Amino acid sequence: MTDTDNLWVLEKKFWTEGADGVHHLTAKGALAVLPYPAGILVDEAIWRDNAVAQRWRTVAFTEPVITLKGDVAVLAYHVSAERAEVPIYEALCTSTYLRDEDEWFRLSHQQTPTAEQD
Image 1 (cartoon, helix red, strand yellow):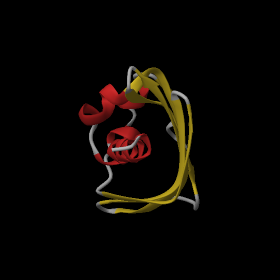
Image 2 (cartoon, rainbow, N blue to C red):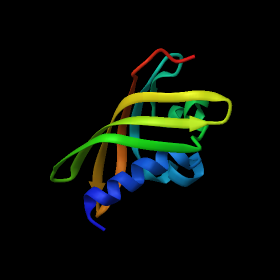
Image 3 (cartoon, rainbow, N blue to C red):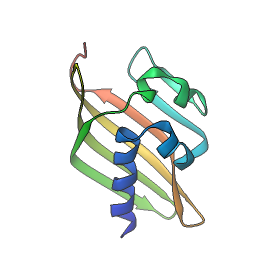
Image 4 (tube, rainbow, N blue to C red):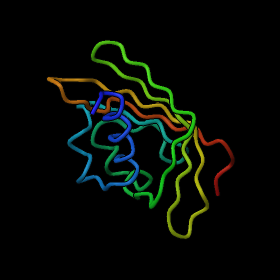
């Protein structure tokens, strides 16, 4: 599997697996910028927030773009995510990954909703 393929697989895991499945794939000091009320979350606060703790049943990435520069990768995409009893969530997202000893760790993640969310 190429780095590009591996990174997209990792990104999908962050949406669909629980914290136990991806926590170890997060860099120390990582940050997430999520829609209100979550806001800016750093390090362990990412995993304590309800917006992060809830997993999505299905996700679809469109408009995927990836930039690789040495040991840094930036992914950008549009996501459509679904979970029970919640309207489909649409957002533009970016995630930055850092390679450390041939393993990728997510350093940052940002979401900008494309429409007002309920």
